Image (cartoon, rainbow, N blue to C red; front, side, top):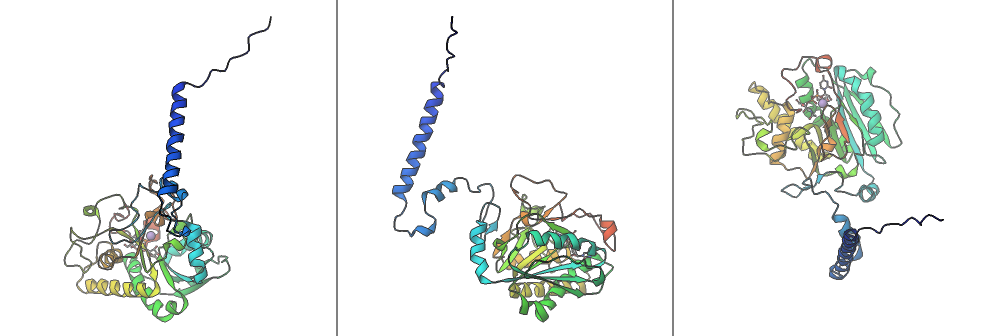
Amino acid sequence: TTSPAPTISPPPRTTITTISYLLLVLLLLLLLNTYLSPQTLPQNTGSGWYEDLLGFFRRTDVVSVTPWLAPIVWEGTFDPVLIDNIYKPMNLTIATTVFAVGKYVSFLKDFLETAEKHFMINFRVRYYVFTDRPNEVPSVNLSGGRHLTVISIPGSNRWQEISAQRMKIIHNTIETQIRKEADYIFCLDVDSKFHFRWGAESLGRLVSVIHPGYYDTTRNNFPYERRPASKAFMSMDQGDYYYGGAVIGGLVEDVYILTKECQKRFEEDAKNSIEAAWQEESHLNRYLYYNKPSKVLSPEYLWQDFKARTKKVKVIRFSGVIKNYAAVRPNAPSKPVSASV
Ligand SMILES: CC(=O)N[C@H]1[C@@H](OP(=O)(O)OP(=O)(O)OC[C@H]2O[C@@H](n3ccc(=O)[nH]c3=O)[C@H](O)[C@@H]2O)O[C@H](CO)[C@H](O)[C@@H]1O
Ligand SMILES: [Mn+2]
């Protein structure tokens, strides 16, 4: 009396049919790629069938080029290894300016320590720290090829002025020092941390970042300066993106011109007793409308810790920390941080 052997039921016919069809389609795609791809192209142009297949999985949820054909850098649109292989042999030096005036000196430690982990790794980096409290600049272990200079500047009792005077000080320091010491420059907010690779994919002649509060909205919502009396004025039918003032980058000479122009217009406003809605950020936005950036960084390069990540943002590379404005700014905020939606 033996029990009957257990029977294994075959997969349903429909499953088999579906799988066969999928295999057939895949085979056809491979054949099409092999026979239809232009054989005259040299092999290294990336026209291999595997690249085409990979192409199916590339980012289609974000726009990765501006209407003037500048790249918009999103995770998944570039090959970091390839990029490093292109830029490494150039032996570049990247200047990084950061202002830590008054209580903002307390942000320096995290800024520098996380930069050492994620910012321009294996490149020569020169940090320029501007502060009125040189004794409070933390000593952070820097990797080889990286260097830090502390530059003393006066304090101020208006945060708007501290933020805005950056243009003038950066301009002057490029003239006296940075232009002899670096090829590219990034001017960054100090109240922030790096969380993920920020590498050579960010380099370009003139580089700016889309403000994280405005990448998913239309132009009429951008907080440009709207009063015609201001030299930062933008009318409702002008503007491409709303750029964040926390990141300005590019070739040293291009940032030299940008900072001069923004400072000039900021001072003309001051003479007329007008201050643009978002100070130098408003002037930066106007400048970049008339002088298009050659590369635009996605909000991965300027996020804010208080913002929930969205589907498009696969990685956060640099993000502003949550700060108690009343505790760190010399004067209480004149209005809520509306540019930081
Ligand atoms: C994310 C982003 O795009 N931030 C911009 C935004 O607000 P934020 O709220 O980010 O401005 P903020 O308070 O961080 O000031 C900008 C920077 O100025 C420096 N600082 C400021 C105050 C102070 O007491 N000490 C000091 O050192 C510091 O480097 C700081 O990171 O608008 C500002 C202008 O209104 C700037 O354009 C900022 O770049
Ligand atoms: Mn900031």
